Image (cartoon, rainbow, N blue to C red):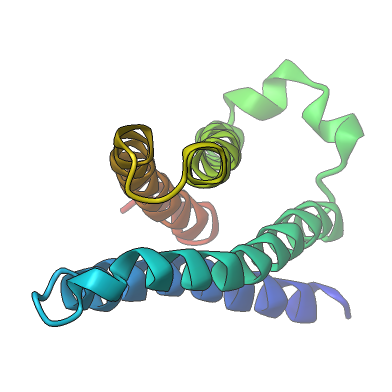
Length: 163
């Protein structure tokens, strides 16, 4: 009875998480690079980043809670995951790949937030250190998006399998 709402909430949170990144990369960044907007870009990224940080944290929290819930509601608890035989199954292997990308995404997201905020606060916008930090944050953000798309691939594979 709770499984379908939990899966639905998981999909909504994944849509918000990945959709926001795609929107940011496909719309916000190209617009911010235009000459007539470029001067406002640092402020825009700071304000939008702070706003997205709240949405992103909520999405990630919902994804973690519903991900654990979905497994449990399918009968896959810690007792099942404690057996090597489980991890040798196609489902177990696929879940392990997904969990590797989830862990990488959480670590990279933490690095991204730390990198994006610490340097600007310490050295101010426009400094050489802030520019290096901005470039690093940009590359880490790309990595987060790629890892998140990999998570989606393995999520679909968990449900549908490979042909």
